[in-house]
Length: 221
Ligand code: SAM
Ligand code: CA
Image (cartoon, rainbow, N blue to C red; front, side, top):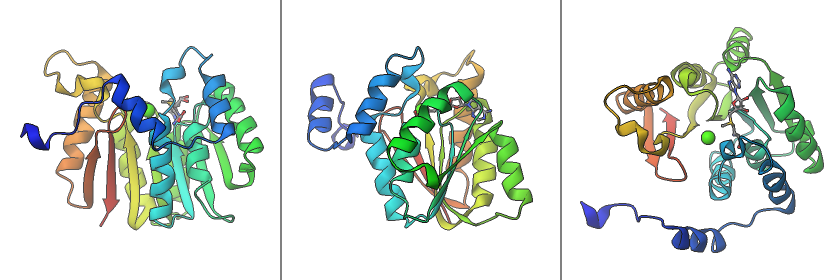
């Protein structure tokens, strides 16, 4: 087993990985810098993960995407910049404060026209899209908001993406807390439930990547 196990990334080797793969744009770099002054800066995705999102969006030739959990906009820039000129990203969040920062950077990156920000509980926005008949019309989804709703977000996204569309779910290893078997908090339990649900879901092909805090890729069959 050990010879096939993913390499353990200590700080030095992670620095090597970053310095040999990540080309972070000046705008994303400034956004990371500005976000680092926020108390909840750790919520932002990692730069290597951002690049992975951009590549995944391109790989599935996505034109229409949805993001659940915008925060200060790092992942939305990574997704939107990989869409074609006439592409669209529906960006869901409940925070005016954080998404004001996001909007500023979307503007600077010339991506505002591709991003449709929906300030409302994401379940409401997803339901609205389904009520509007948007089933199977999206190519890509990224789920990175309140963990208690992960399963509901996944089920709604599965209806919204087309066959061959990709749903990416962040924090599926939850700093290792997924191993806990007793007295788990609500977030941990929600992630454990989603992981079990994904594993037994024959409507998708599944990959769990040990990137950052763990990211699962679910491709709709
Ligand atoms: N993807 C972001 C990035 O790259 O910086 C990080 C997202 S952060 C982990 C989670 C976000 O989910 C927060 O901005 C929070 O306001 C938002 N959120 C929490 N509950 C929500 C809900 N019910 N509906 C929509 N967004 C929600
Ligand atoms: Ca996250």
